[in-house]
Length: 116
Image 1 (cartoon, rainbow, N blue to C red):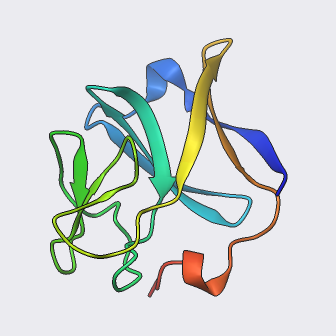
Image 2: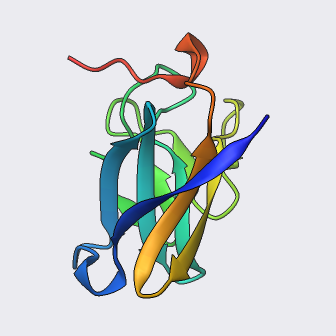
């Protein structure tokens, strides 16, 4: 599957709360600054398809605001439950701009969050 880099935000403009949710090329992306560095995942809980961006980030993991499932943001691994891991996206900083690499193909229904 081919992927392309897309501008996300200027590195100096990243939100102070340490997370940014956006939509790029049809993908819902949750980017975060954690101790391990800049990371990005598909902004969709693999349990009930809710947006993870409304959840709390602690110790490098995001907690689903709907039911409390936790996911390691650096690896996408589900912590302490048997839900599928999150899709992760590569990030880089180029000329002061944070860029994210997402698939060129649009997300499938299994990769889209339920959005009201």
